[in-house]
Image (tube, rainbow, N blue to C red; front, side, top):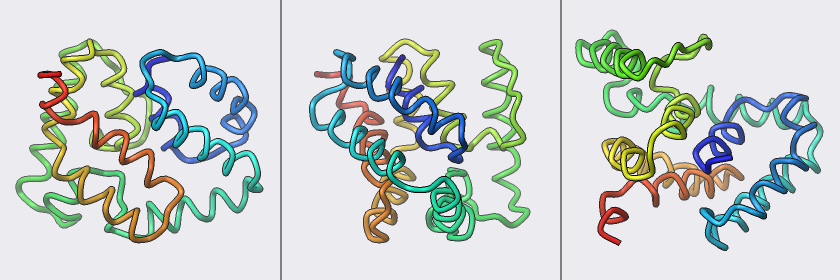
Length: 174
């Protein structure tokens, strides 16, 4: 399973299905050569947290973190344009939705196209260099979001750090 798919699954709203698959997800992380040791440690730490926390507590914390705290929103255009009927956010969402369609992706979620787990699902379908280039467009937003989650002490902060570190064009030069 590509790292972006793993990150998408772990950053999405927690449910019983996720908890049921945590052992398999952990095994995938452990055997993936595309995930470095620091990333594996961060991912496995979150899996431990998810495994040892009652589902209702995980869901409550997730909603408080991502849905009720605007600085932590997983809707990336929110950080650029806000939630108001800004003339720029709508076109950005339309452009992103059209990009998915150009790649033959039909979204089956009620989420807006800028929802980070959905973006990561899309990135998982791309070649590595293409995914890096695609995500690099959001690097500044990812940096702000990561910093906000670190300041809040969120267990999800290390996952955003992974996304941010992979969303830089300097990775292509390496």
